[in-house]
Amino acid sequence: MAGANREKSGDVVRDFTTRLRDEWRREVACQCQPTLPFPCICKGYIVQVDLMEKWIDENLDKLLADVEPKMTYRSWKFPIKSDILRGSEKRCVRVFGILLELGHGELIDLFKSAGILDNNLQFSIPSIMSRLQSGLEDNNIPDAEKIIDEFENAKWVFCPPRLELDMDENFVGNFIMPFCRRERINLKGGTASVFQAAIKQEFILDPNLKEALRKTLYHDDDHGMCYVLALKSFSEKSKDIYEWEKQAFVGLRGNQSVPIVKSLGCYSHYDGREMSYNLLLEYGQMDLDEYWADLGNIPPVRWEEIRRFWKSLFRVAEAIRGVHNLTFKRGETENHYDG
Ligand SMILES: [Zn+2]
Image 1 (tube, protein in one colour):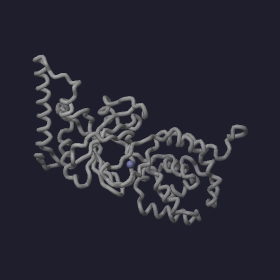
Image 2 (image 1 turned 45 degrees about the vertical axis):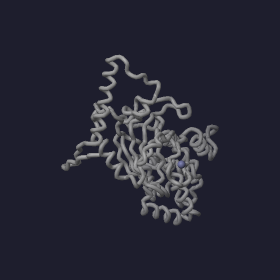
Image 3 (image 1 turned 60 degrees about the vertical axis):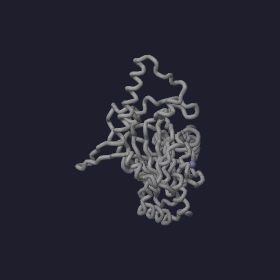
């Protein structure tokens, strides 16, 4: 970085914030439950953290050199080595990205030494948070509490959950699911809300889920290449039904011959206001009612068609009987679901 090529102080950080705003943001749909009286508080975007982290990794020395003059609290002046932010277990490249966005990149070593790392970012562990607060205060950082609040608030767009096939997760906090579309498709069922959800191709990294969603890939005019799935969302009062349905889908897992939509996984989410229980399902384009009502579906005429039609329909009926009446094993015990 010598001579004429030397970048002016602040240039790399400015480059980072510009890219964060213009290149790495991804729009996401409102996630509020339609039945709740709360106003929408969704941020409306998440950050494509893989791209962000790759860029930070490549520019880490320059970024640290940029924020170093602001590290006035440091009584000793060894330069911070970029490698201590990388590594796998104690990696805090993402943490650094959030601090840079907040204009506090210079606090990275205090956050790191308190134990705020990329892999525990979403948990806000009380002992770590109080260590952070005293770390900031001991080093006479003004507004320690305000900085921590801002960090806690800002971090959620940087940790969207990764979806995986057969996931079963409990999310606590203001997690933002990475759906760019989330449109309600049923107003019929009372116990659950069903949504058609789209997710950008770049957010599905699990090869098994990729394979399961392969056929749904389409080009979205606003969001580029996306997969489609259905999201069935239950509130706290329908939790039992959610558990039963979940078990029923687990019972059907791996049975390729059952011609009904399959479960891709599930998660619960408590955002501090409301609990929701969610099934991720293959997206079936229509239910049977809608299929029969669709004038585009020409009724079977020739006898082979009639035979094929009724044969398929009987397989659906068979599958429904399977969902409502099945046996599944959990460890040693065998349960029977008779719904
Ligand atoms: Zn919302």
